[in-house]
Length: 433
Image 1 (spheres, helix red, strand yellow):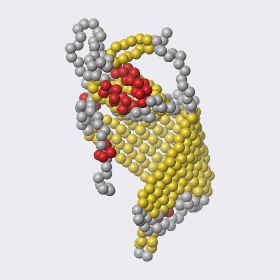
Image 2 (tube, helix red, strand yellow):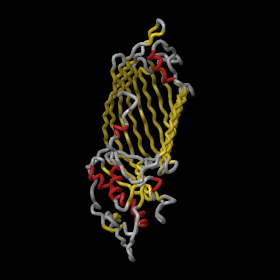
Image 3 (spheres, one colour):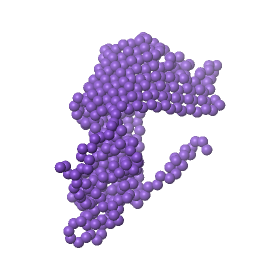
């Protein structure tokens, strides 16, 4: 008979010492800092915060005052969110003799009622805190052994298919300036633990009307109307825990001021990922190589004298997103090129983002994006045509973007939360009334 160890926290006003000998006369709540790192469809941050607030043997505190840091992460698969609760014992002020880290995982159907979602999160929260509470407050944890009540239960009916449809728009109007942007699309996805297939399409249109610019006797129109349609399909199959093969096909069309009358691409290749596809923290450290071909029909003759082009291509992609408690590093590198003639067309791009907690009161995020490319642009540009000039920016050889965010914080120590007047606080004081 299988035995299930159920660890239940005493939720009474005061813990009872279950060990022999005299009862403890004084005790202090375990100081826990909640670090909500990633969240999917289940509102785990709010639920876990509420459960911690109800525990008389726990006090939620800022990180600088914590004995234990509780990290929350989630990934999604079909209708389920896979949630990881990871407790880390502070190496200086933590609980003596307790584990350096301990984690629990739980699967929650995001379609369940709110009360059922909360009920599913309480047991793993109790279990992940139990090793620390049992040492910090003797008698705060009781242990019972019981046979699983539903050992032969059959999982409910599920489907690997998913459908997404989206539409949106943006616009503004005044007497002399008008702008309208609209977009719509759909995707159909089939996903299992071993393979995934997707078909998608998207439509974008943007119209910008504004007064013409007059230079001497020359009038330059500053209006623009851009449209693009794109779509594609992709499929992948996991051969092993680390190796995957896959393909993707895509194509699109631009309005006459854009680059492509039509373009079509097809590629297939292999990927190696150091982490499994269902890693609970969502960690990724992968490299992929794809080979294929591309066919283009251009709206205007390009600098190579081409109105159409057909050529083989290769793509090398490296990506990584690794999270260890309070530090996350995300990186992406890609190299795309025409196989022959070499370097006639190529695009090298990369981005690095680091998010880390430097100390108890300092957080830092740094991101850098760079692209070096050789893409044939239009052979001639009418410099008096505002839209033609602005739309030719796709052929610029180098683009670099960077940002950093440094935050110093001294948090309140009474664990109080208040979300009132958030929208009022965020009103733009430099625009409008």
